[in-house]
Image 1: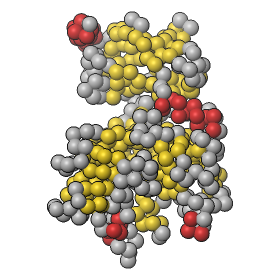
Image 2 (image 1 turned 45 degrees about the horizontal axis):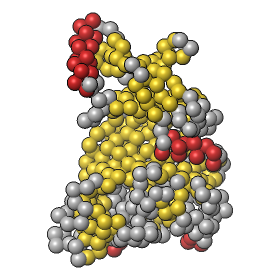
Image 3 (image 1 turned 45 degrees about the vertical axis):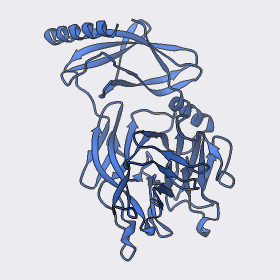
Image 4 (image 1 turned 180 degrees about the vertical axis):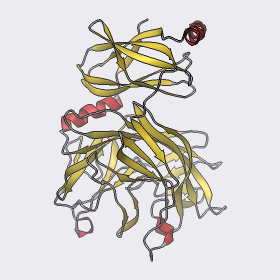
Length: 419
């Protein structure tokens, strides 16, 4: 079947190229399943379908007997994927029908852009800043131990109206760096290294290179390499863990009537040594860590979890998603809802949430912590994946909306080829 499909596709490629016109390739439907969908990113794999710079794909939806063009984007890979946003509301239990064409030389838009400089990768949506990923080495303020220097983290993270939601160089925790995820207690052979508390001088995490940068009409982002470096082992500056960060921002409006960003972070870890390592159980480390803006304190911020916990009782509990937000003076309220994927370790994941009296001021810190309750053994040759989504918003988001966005992330619609 696959061989026959490949031969058919090759024939269509030759025809489309020679005739300079689009040719119908296949028809398929998207089933909402048990859940209502609103402006939901959708994809399916293109096994057996050839895509090139000169021969692109064009997607149409069948609406009341008419073909309505839908903006789509191909993600290259061993098996490429076609992405688009299923715009509008799709009721639970319903489906929508599409036609995919081969079309030579079709131009591709870049609504989500990724601007690379020596200092950072900046993601934008229609020229509005979403976030910066720091490439250049960031040093702490003058007079502070340079062991706190680091790169490979997200800061600033902007709300759609421009409020800066992340913080670095906090005097109480110079090792807190916007949005980042080092591990705290890592058993390596006969010693334990702390990659989190940089002033321990035991280890660190550095950005090491860009694998790819993507711009497009459906999503834009980047794929980068990071290394966890051990200062204590038999070889000074030994790389213990290789990590890939895949970060992508979606061109969608996930909250009706409210401007919001939808951003995914996927971390892929593999052991760089010849022996297994142990990520020892601890209340901090790994997952996805978030040090919030200095404008928030115990009186003007909130933490709300999918399980109904608040900041006073959320620490150490488990959650599918957690809403962290607060008030900006004269600039309204903004926040980030963090979503954990069902495939993640220890799902639903335990959390570290700072208490209300933190530092006497009530500064805000949140983290999903997959090693809070149990050790995690990482074996050479395996890849360990953690998937997270962030809904970055202004105003406030109803819990029912957060649940819907989590459902899209955890249980996306089903695609079925019909012809």
